[in-house]
Length: 149
Image: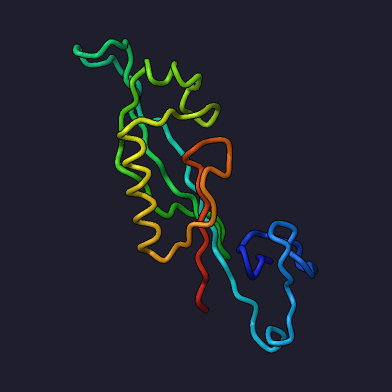
């Protein structure tokens, strides 16, 4: 079962949401069918690692993209993905991370632009942005969308 207010998953017999504290039962809702939500979260994927261009001070250049995993009544599925973008090795090292699922992805102009465009795609498709950077990284945003039955 999903919370009627925030859309996060809760126990089926919950009276209040453990995430937002909202009541799950009201007189008006007793006669209505429970709304269903699907949720989505942004992830990062490293696509390649190659020698940096000659004009760079770095030895390596990484290419990555963001992708969105949706979870609904039918299970998990891929919702959307960003255009690929590049990360310079010096930027990655300065951030202290690897930019993979094991560490943070540094913010650079290309990554930030790809992230903004992806959020735009999601909101245009009816997804509600419910949290920013909710996981371990700046790009780990979550969304919800009401399922119309």
